[in-house]
Length: 311
Image (cartoon, rainbow, N blue to C red; front, side, top):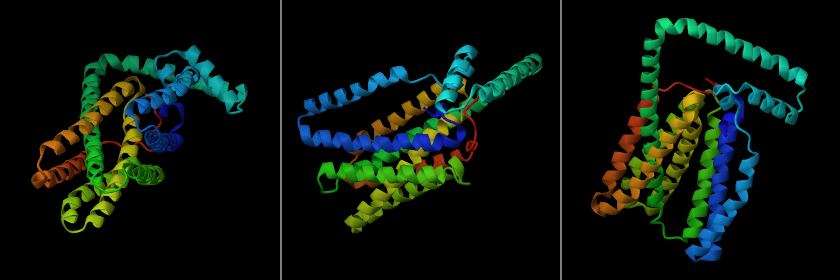
């Protein structure tokens, strides 16, 4: 979806989608409240999702993907369609498109001349850089989702209606998504905003065990602020990570990122149900330390603000 827009609007588009996710949480909560029975809830969700499926038929392939695959005829048709929808004439589109293709051809010839001299070294360096970035983003995804569910698991102990709890959580998440979308387009960029949000999350997770022993209300407030911070962190990562990779490997890198993210989500309930209450605080401390490690490793990644998602 991020490939369908320009670099100037990726943060807006990505975070609109994430805010829509919180709206989905509210809708599911409403379904759960009305249906009560879990089988009816499953049917309600299936029907709701089914209504969206026809849209996928009309959703175009992204220009960047077509360009990466060198499907220039399809790319030209798609760009002309986009230009028409944006009320741009062919006179405005075609010269720029031809110049773009001409520049790409020149670049390809230039690279072919160099490849005989630097092919092995270039491939090695490219692979090494990609591997380092993949390792960092996988740990990043694992940690952010681990923290998200660690905090959410702590909020489950609040003695209020689960429906109300989910709605409050959805509002807090939406605020986190919106805040991060506003910050990441400033001079802080993707990386700076991510570091701030993750740092706040780590601080909250570290403080929660201390506060919960003395002040239940304070623990709830810190938990909610932690959820705000980790929601912002996740929203940034879902925009930051795809921008780190070129189109040809973006889907694979993003797939690994999502896989490790869900591993972090899976491990939280396993740990929390296996560890006794006496030692549960240790899991919070370890999670905060892991967050600090990810924060430091993130500094090795490049900033991607205003970077086009191309090859």
